[in-house]
Amino acid sequence: MSGKFLVINAGSSSLKFALYVMPEGTLIVNGYIEKIGNLDSFYTLKWNEKKEEKRKQIENHTEALQTMFKELLEKQFIKDISEIQGIGHRVLHGGEFYSNSVIIDDKVLQNIKSLTKLGPLHHPGEIAGIESMKKLMPDVPQVAVFDTAFHQTMPQENFMYAVPIEWYRDNSVRKYGFHGTSHKYITESMQEHFKKKDVNLIICHIGSGASICAVKDGKCHNTTMGLTPLDGLVMGTRCGTIDSSVIEYICKERNLSVEEVNHILNKNSGLLGIAGKNDFRDIEELANNGDEMAQLAIKMLRKSIVNFIAQYFVELNGELDAIVFTAGIGENAITLRADIINSISNALGVELDSNANNSVASFKDKKSGVISTIHSKFQVIVMPTNEEYMILKDTFELSQQLKEKDIPKSYFIKK
Ligand code: AMP
Image (tube, rainbow, N blue to C red):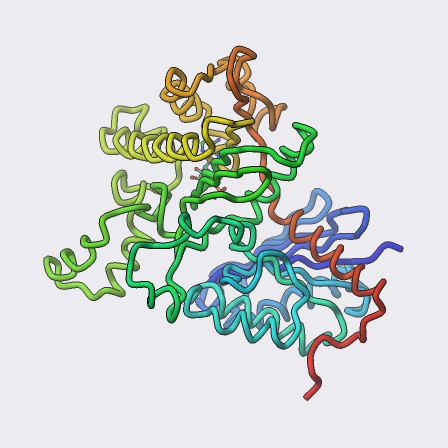
């Protein structure tokens, strides 16, 4: 029987939500509440071909969810909250606890809380979301879908840092990796595409946040982000991999605290730090008009992607089914894709099909496709990611499993 399922993605000061009918997978409405905690917070709702934007001061994530329910009821997307049969939450950090999505019970909530130290910007909003739902509808299953879960299959030599072992044992310092839900979605799509489970892939998720994942036999083998999403590629506002001594040095040189430097490395670095803009379209336009810093920023981004592709190609012993480009830049930046493939062409035995590359982007008729020639040793594919679908799918499947098992309805101890 059909039922309504909510997907919730809480950021540090934002909340995205979407209401679906399952198992059909029909989207009823989605919404985006922004600038939570600011005086000028506002939200947008989209349904059918309609769009509505409203200004409303929203203090915190609990209020954001109340606003969401008010709209869902007023506009009759639901007649009563009892219509909702499952809620899926995107959760940033699952630490070493979770390699898959789980139904949230008291123990899971406690574990998510204990991981706030590893996700200090995201976890408070996510926890507020889970707790508000728990109060409002304690009998409805809530599912946590972790950004780190897919990467839990990395071998130890790939996830350890060469620091004192106690930092790992006592303080959980290791590489976790992020964008796992996206990398998993692409992996499953490629398993269908190649009609086999044991696919070997290099997935380039290049959006404002960016990470690459080496997939070996259908599982994560290595990835570029680390303890936090700061590591790896040059990103919109994050620096990616740098010598960690920069931090102490620049603290002293510019009289900054460690917190201030960490903030700058996350929010004012990357493309923004070099080119003064973080949106790739703006940077491309500046570069095309001769701006040297924008040209440099694009070269640095390209080089960081090429370097990791080369590293992962060797780690996969050259036995690759495909390089896949996804997310905002990966799906749309046609020239950048061409430059990357041309830079690795000789070394890795791959050839760009320029016509195919030019015809695939989310603003064109063709949103996905193979952009390498048949003479290549492996394929290069553009494929839009769909993290929301993965959260929905896991939420639906886990909720169904609970129903079938006839497990007692309350997942939380009633106080
Ligand atoms: P995401 O974080 O996946 O939403 O990706 C956002 C990034 O994708 C931004 O840097 C955008 O500038 C970039 N992007 C979106 N559309 C295009 C496009 N048509 N060409 C180049 N970059 C794009």
